[in-house]
Amino acid sequence: MESIPEHKIIRSQLFSDCFFLSIVVLISLILYIPSLGFYSDDWSFLAPLNLSTDQSFLGLFQSVYLHQPNVQMRPVQVLYIAGLYWLFGLNPLGYHLINCVFLSLGIVFFYLVLRELKQPRFLALSIPLVYALLPHYSTNRFWVAAFQITLSMTLYFLSLYADLVAVRTKTTLGLWAWKLISIASLLISGLAYEIFLPWFLFNPLLSWYKGRLLNQSILSYFSKLKLILLMGSTFPCVVFVFLFKKMTTTRQGELEFREHLGWLFQLFKDAVTISYGDYGFKLPRIVGSIIYSQTNWVILILGGLVGLVVFSYLFHIVKLQNINLLNYTNELKLTLASFFVFAAGYSIFLLTQNAQNSAAGISNRIAIASAIGVAFTFIGLIGLASSFIRTNRSRKVLFCLLIALLCSSGFIINNAIASYWADAYRQEQNILADIQQHLPSLKDDATLILDGICPYSGPAVVFESNWDLAGALRIIYKTYTLKADVVTPNLQVNEDGLTTALYYGSLVSHYPYENLLIYNIKDKLVHEITDADAAYRYFQTFNADYDNNCPKGREGHGVRIF
Image 1 (spheres, rainbow, N blue to C red):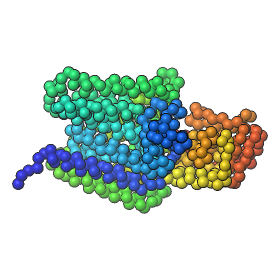
Image 2: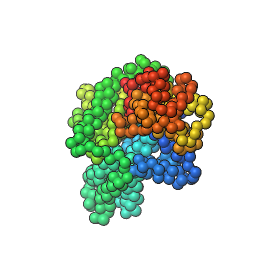
Image 3: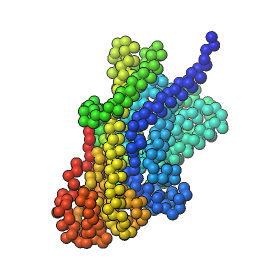
Image 4: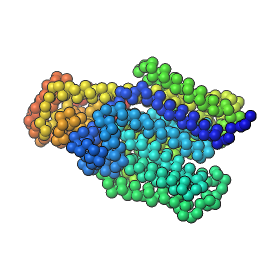
């Protein structure tokens, strides 16, 4: 009987594993994706897009990019959201489905990178699998304004994959093609979001390492010109993106060097606490609390099935290997290296100061890079624990079982967090319908202050600021001059108007007593506020503490749920 060529076996394995990873990602979000909507910054993008007089793709891009300085450092983000609006308008489902596609592709390219680096199949599959279901960067699953980060992640792995394939490409045409893909992915990724920008500097090192794995010097089959193209073109591209962002950003920060280091230390400390504390040592307690307090049998059953499928697929792979897969020394090296990868996920903040960490709030979007290190850590620790088991079969069973439990936990937590985002969007729709019913018209220069709502549903934003409520109302009333905000404990009554502050006072909005209305959604009445005395009387009567008896929350975090 004729044996199957090895390259065909490998190709079949690659296809099977990529399909499996894509299915797992799809299953992980199939329950909640139809219920997701728009939140917070989304509305500030949607309003100019909806009100643009030029509804062509270029006109939509210009309506946002030319009039919002804070996004000019990320032109790809604006292109991305303008393209999504051009395709789907105000229907959020299409936005979330596209994000699902890019999340799946990112996980697949991550797997392909590890296979190019000659990692064992079970390891190359396990790490992206765990990473795909980590709740550490859950916001990137739910929030349209963070979808460019998912895109940036996917393009980083594509760029690295293209570089690694270029190393084993012997033809000039193939080299140029793969390197162009790598450079294009680098530029698009960096101009979409900056979290992965420093990681591209590792691409030449990993390309050199790939050359070593091929058992021949990279110099032996590349001319100096080709080698410069392959190894040297990455750095100037990274510098170009960095300089572009430096010139266009409006979020530089003003901390001195020593203060910056203190801030960075606190940021990293919080990241370690959340990544390895809340979602590490405390993971069983979090899952237990979700099962106890938010019993949803559909989520629990599907989460159990995900774990069963993961165990079955992984065990099918490892049982075919007759060698000892789990070695104490190798797993220890993997664990130690994972901490370097985790730290690299925050390296961009050596140059910027605009970030904070959160376990489940919108600030956890920045953890998408460091979570790669977390996935390495978890797999390394699982491998270490399994390596102490005496028999090879038992090691494999324990390894696959622990990964299956980890994936089930991630599935349950992500879906629990998603329930708050779905609830937040339902609240938004009810609020907007209520306002439209009781205020059928508003003056173009009116300011509407909304009272009687809670700004957060768990970690998800309902309405918390001038940009989200104003953006939504501008779409409804078809005017870009309308202003709006929400009553929270951050509101102050001044002699010349009302003031709101967000993010520890860094974002302040002032509303003079001119065409100023407060709509209390509880009593369904509009209160015209003409001076400070009228404002004081209103709040003493209806909401003296400005909190509407809401659970305590804060910007970037929402209300703590774990």
